[in-house]
Length: 39
Figure 1 (cartoon, rainbow, N blue to C red):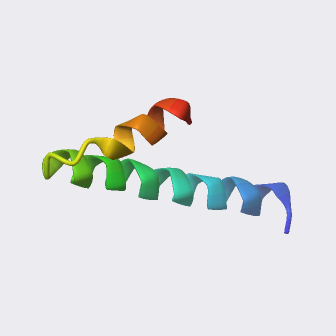
Figure 2 (figure 1 turned 60 degrees about the horizontal axis):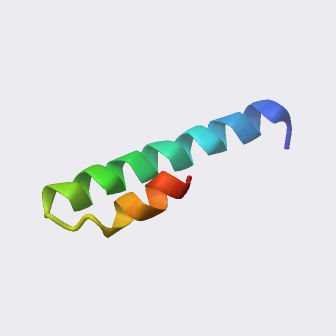
């Protein structure tokens, strides 16, 4: 795996995490924000 592949995977994981935060905040479940602050 080269650096371009790693950057692509990192982008996918960050997009997934952003989507999860948005979904959980939309349902008034704010615990994920604590994890996002540490990140």
